[in-house]
Image 1 (tube, rainbow, N blue to C red):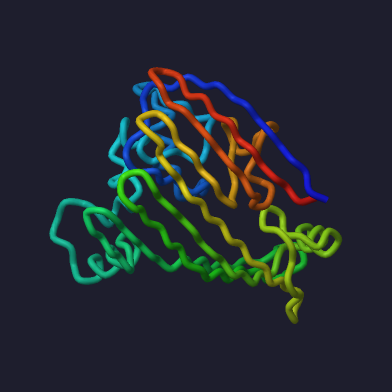
Image 2 (cartoon, one colour):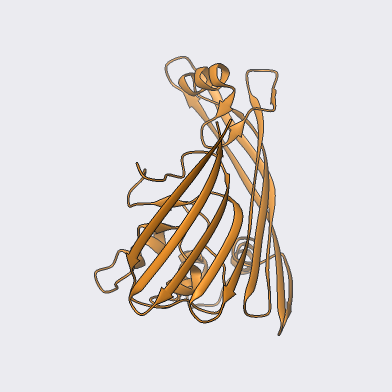
Length: 249
């Protein structure tokens, strides 16, 4: 069964939109340094609308510098090992840039392991994927990514997944692996169009977050990706946003 969700929200904002239309991915590990800037008392940034809009971030801080790992960007002569890690972790793998368009592609990987101390169960996650983003002119931007995952969870999460047939925040389970693991995937994407000086329209499949903190009772990123249409206008100190979401129950 499909459900419709509509939210109409008016917010105060201290600046207007920039030229490029990319949005920062919802990832708390990746965004910690960004949040240090937007929550600073020195700026008037509306933190309750997420994902953050990159042109708005650039109004208050150097986004290109804070998104890079600090220890890889100290001002000294780097060894070949540091230069290799710098290239691998902070530079785009595939780039095609021209004055009127830009396309960037990168691999996405996450590997981790652990052990449940009570029963001695080994847990792990293996994620591989890719992202592609770009722009055409100054008004049209796009982004997409895809992840394929295999994982073995701790017992309480394993029980939930087997009962409900879904991974929390990740959607349906595709297959059950030998040894008690699960196989699942995730895909997001959007197109963003700037119309005139003040208007922005975004159509995508992903997540939005309204509020501050780790979770939100209004609209959280704890649910799976969903189809959405978002329209916003930035004028003076006012930001007016209309967000349509479509969920699958």
